[in-house]
Amino acid sequence: MKTVLKLIEGLLWCSGLVIVGIFLGQIGLEELERMNAVAAFKADQVVQTTAVVSELPGDDVPAAAPSPEKAGVVSAIDYEPAAPDQSLWSSGRIAAFAASLTRQTSPVLGVFEIPRFDLELPIYDGASDLHMDRGIARIEGTAMPGHDEGNLGIAGHRDGYFRVLKDIQFGDEITLTTANGTQTFIVEQLMTVDPSAVEVLYNTEKTAITLVTCYPFYYVGHAPERFIVRAVLQEPKQLTKTTKQNN
View 1 (cartoon, rainbow, N blue to C red):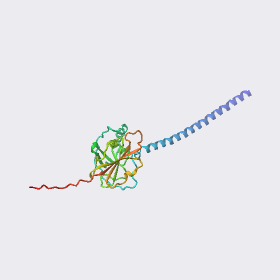
View 2 (cartoon, rainbow, N blue to C red):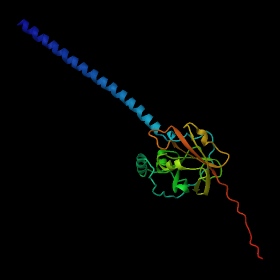
View 3 (tube, helix red, strand yellow):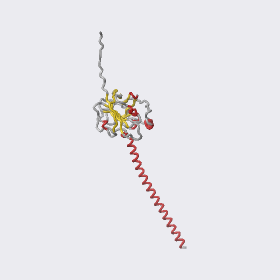
View 4 (cartoon, rainbow, N blue to C red):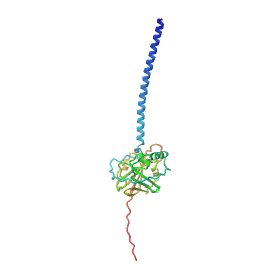
């Protein structure tokens, strides 16, 4: 009888140890899962932050120049953009444009045209992805469109509206129409620069617009360089009044 009781007591002790082991193991497993979840969350936050930073317009255009003065404020204009020619666009940019139609942009500052490409599109204020999906955008810290001084920086996506810049040439005409009237610029400089070359956005001696997009135009991933187009304001032609003499 004593042997049976001792056997039962031994079994109870073993069962108790097993239950305690299971309990402690469950706690340890839950703590391990909690630690893994926290680590995964932190890693995910890092990935998301990196993705956001890599997709910022700053990845497509240099940051605004640190010191140039704004050339004043220009009134928005009433302009309804036409459906764009997307024949050169990437599929991702076409999808981004479609998605942007459901979101509200800032007012249109002006209408940008390159007649040789039959390109006409709106200029928005601030180089956000939304603005560059819907049109092109003034780079913060540069001149305002429609004024007679300063260097207006304009950013656009290389796989969207600004892909046509791959074929731009010296002497091409660019027009800018705002509430203040229409200005004509002539392309005088083309160059590729490092993304950190913010000096391209500094004020210029002549009134100018500087177009900025990623380069190369066809590149998988984040393009390593920036393509710059500098166009200078064309001076108004001096008209000479002539009189017809009667013989």
